[in-house]
Length: 77
Image 1 (cartoon, rainbow, N blue to C red):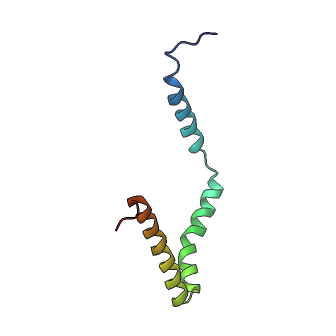
Image 2: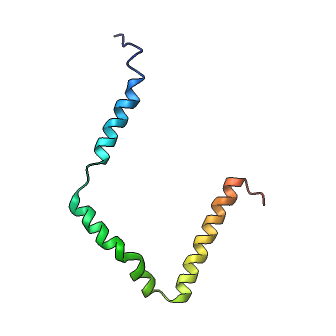
Image 3: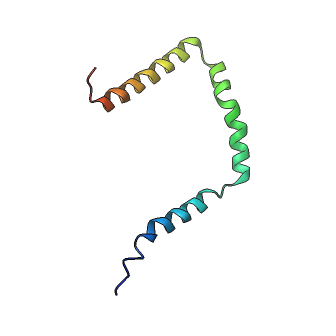
């Protein structure tokens, strides 16, 4: 079976359009719940942590960012 070579460039375009349409369909109830919980989450968690715990979490985050940065640069300082 012979398929025209003109068809092949269209495959990524058609696939992308289909993915874009699928991604736009969201459950409105799930979105509403996410907004409610998401707006509270970080503030409530921070209020429950002690200053030492917050400091330790921040320290781990900084080390992770620097490790990623060094890996990207090839480890040279």
